[in-house]
Every structure is written in C-alpha cells, then in structure tokens.
Length: 217
Ligand code: AP5
Ligand code: ZN
Image (cartoon, helix red, strand yellow):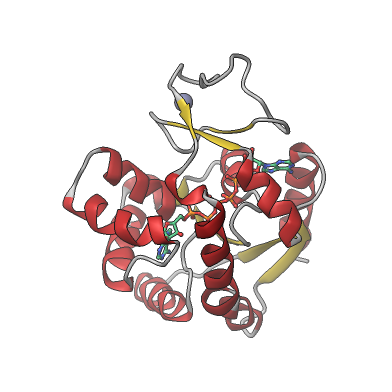
C-alpha cells in the first residue's frame, strides 16, 4: 500500500505510523525523522533544516522534496510506503503526484488523523524522544518509559525536542492550518481521504486506522 498520513503536530502520526508500517509491512518514511537524523549527524542539510524547524516553519520545498524522493527511491519502498509529514503543502503534493505518475503508481489512501488543539498541545508538552532514534517516542503520562529518561527500545537518552517549546508549537499549529490543511482538500478531490479520530488509547487508534484503510472510509 502507498499511504500518506496527515494531521496536526502531536496528533500521533509518528506513533501510529510505526505501528501501521509494521502491520502493513511497508517502510515508515518520516521527513521530520530524516531531518532530525541529519541534524544529529551534523550534515549541511541538517544545519539548514534546524534553523527552520526550531522556528516551527517548513523547511524549503526544494531540499525537502529532493530528500523525500531519495528515500522513496530506496529498494525497501518499491512495494509501498507510509509517508509521515510529507507532503506538507500543495506544491509538495503536486511534486509527489508528478513522481508517482512518472513511476506509473498511485496512492491508495490519505489517512487524516483528527485531534482537538488542547489535546495535541498536551501530547506535545509531555513528549520525550530518543536521542539515538527519533522514531522512539514516549509521553511522560500517556506512555512513560520503564525507566525515567531512558528509551525502552535502545537504552538511548530521552529528551524534549527543541521545537516542542510552547511558542514554537503555536507557530507549527498555524503553519499546519495555513499550509498543510489545504492538501486535505487537494486529496479529497482525488477521492483519497480517510478521516479518523486520533482520540483514545494508541491501540484503539491503530485499530480504527486499519479498519478505515480496509474499508476506504
Ligand atoms: P515532524 O517531525 O513531522 O513533526 P509534526 O508534524 O509537527 O508532528 P509531530 O512529530 O510533532 O507529532 P506526531 O503527530 O508525529 O505525534 P507523535 O506520534 O510524536 O516535523 C517537524 C518539523 O520538521 C516541521 O515543523 C518542519 O520544520 C520540518 N518538516 C518535516 N517535514 C517537512 C516537510 N514535508 N516540509 C517542510 N518541512 C518539514 O505523538 C505526540 C505525543 O503524543 C507523544 O508523546 C506520544 O507518545 C503521544 N501520543 C500519541 N498518540 C497518543 C494517544 N492516542 N493517546 C495519548 N498520547 C498519545
Ligand atoms: Zn531509542
């Protein structure tokens, strides 16, 4: 399957993507995780991305699209993929359409995770991420690690993301409403959007997502 995951910051896209990718046996491709990996390796791309991410703004399309294309061209993505955080505006969605057309493939669904603003703010405030792998995500109250400050999966140190400060979160929410939400209409016109509530326990949301993807609604 080829799926795009969309939803406000903190809705649980990364959390759900890890589970869905495993169940559907497709790679989880997160542009946010790719940028964070570049930041920790201190690459040129990482340095550029960090300045935008810390302010809560989108990284410029040119570098983002090139990075996403590169990742999608890897052999493990041949049979399908779950895109998390890409596309994030209409021009990225158009670039993705262009790429898929060239390859002669199509998206199967755009899964839209809905969560109210007060909930996503709570989720982001308590989020702790692993320094070794930012796909290892915890929450101080909702899904605490077994040992304080230590990743259950790899023993890495848990930290609060630089862009999870209250002020940056406000900007990220605004960017989501103005730049990312329009892609939902863009994909709705293609009949691809499946909307589910991201509220409730993580496993319940995963079940809801799998059901919705199966029935296409
Ligand atoms: P990115 O990393 O994509 O961040 P985001 O979209 O803001 O989303 P988040 O990672 O904040 O949240 P999430 O929905 O994945 O939630 P999570 O599962 O962690 O992007 C970061 C930045 O990179 C952007 O601002 C931009 O600068 C740049 N960028 C990335 N892609 C780009 C692109 N395409 N173009 C340009 N720039 C780009 O969950 C949140 C918390 O809630 C966790 O603590 C989790 O444990 C908890 N939680 C999850 N589910 C539940 C539940 N059901 N109940 C209770 N708690 C839950
Ligand atoms: Zn870890």
